[in-house]
Image 1: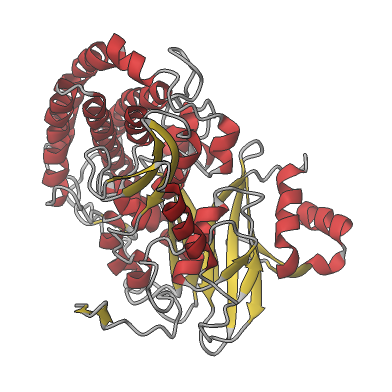
Image 2: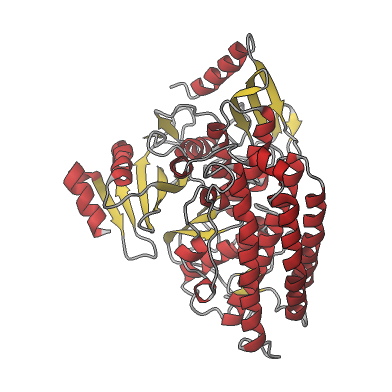
Amino acid sequence: MEEIKNLLTAKFGSDIITGEEAGMLQPALLIDPARIAEVCLELRDNEATYFDFLACLSGVDYGIDAGKFGVVYNLSSIPYKTQLTLKVIKEHGRDINDLPSFPSLSSVYRTAEWHEREAFDLVGIYFEGHPDLRRILLPDDWEGYPLRKDYKNAEYYKGIKID
Amino acid sequence: MNYNEALERYNKKIAEAATEDMILNMGPQHPSTHGVLRLELITDGEIVKEVIPHMGYLHRCFEKHAESLTYQQTIPFTDRMDYLASMTNAHAWVMGVERMMGIDKEIPKRVEYIRVLVSELNRIGSHLIAIGTYGIDIGAFTPFLWCFRDREHIMNMLEWASGSRLLYNYIWVGGLFYDLPVGFEERCREFVDYFKPKLKELNELLTDNQIFIKRTASVGVLPHDVAIQYGCSGPVLRGSGIKWDLRRIDNYSAYPEIDFDIPVGKGEMGKLGDCWDRYKVRVDEVAESLKIIEQCLDRLQKELKRTPDFDPRAKMPRKITPKAQDFYMRAEGAKGELGFYFIADGRTEVPFRAKARGPSFNNLSVVPAISKGVMIADLIAIIGSIDFVLGEVDR
């Protein structure tokens, strides 16, 4: 973990890492949201890390009181058999016409394409630079983002009552 | 900001393509998919130019349900993700919760071995469906019947242990719902002895069949770098020649004490990472799982014998409130890396957020990339060789 921190600060400057969650079962690094794609590209290609496998990408709504949205990236390195958790978090309002937005990782890991579509679909997070950001699990004309904490279950869909 | 521009782009593409190409819908219900999936194909005659998957038909809102259910109550919902290998799903979830609570070292050895035993039985069952239905996709009917005949024995045994045929709810946080029924180990050994020659027969019938090889070798070649880029795992990644099995990488549960190999694709019949390689990895994995089961049975019958006072629920905590933290648990399901990402707030018994990473989701996402320019019949072969379960794609 220390090595990765040193490597990132040496390459991108000290404000790239905005926080750290240590002392828990699985430590995580908080990254400056605007530069997450560069960081991942570096971690993927650097010979010392080779985090070439994006295992999981989760969009998170941190609750109504916190007023924050974030994305969590679980990376693995197949050659080194290591794991790393990166997070980006930013404060943002809950208006569904003004979505929190993060850079897309789809140019670094192709698998991010579908994962980001899912985060967009269910949590309502916009990914800048995504080639095809459509809803993935819900119908295209669904209103609202179901995994948001203030989501109210829809009663009707196209005039059909939902039980 | 217009959040629907991608949708308009997509609609425009479909509308314009229709003038010279053909738009074909494969599915929503197609025999080569386990579940409902609609593939929109843009074809030029019989050549597939583009594949656009549409899913969500089976969306049972696992993550939404998990928002209001406790860790223990969510276990039946994990069963419904990959309903062909529910044991491995529940195992992954339960291990994640146990590790967050810090009780993963206290689980009795007998419980761990039973968990591995039933998970591997279930893995064989899942692979048998993959192998059998793949035969059907290609046009061979007998292997399907043979596989389902042998799978039936597994189903009966798991039903005997858990009381249910498909969705077991057998592995619980801190233990098991029941101990194995009396006589299970002996019956299981009988099954292994019965099944070994059957596997050989199956290989003679399907794996080395010239028609089958012609249909699958060098078709749908997935190079290993593409597989990693798309986050493929399990037999799909191993079929491309990468030795990556989380049972060995993470060494969880009882696996470090068990001896087994990790089969990888070698490109024996065609190119490395083709449909035949992915299929062969599954066949070899069935044989490896049999090895694991035999070792589990040895331990369960010799050192970790059933005792009258053994209570598989003894370590089950009354209240599950992990301290506030994030945790990502991964395990090797039958289809690949099955991950659960937990956010616990430390106050309630309900996870603040639980995200499931289904291996089939990523494995399906690679299909458009490896099926450009193939024939429609080959697309069926590719889909079948990926072996995704839509319950896990949609969750």
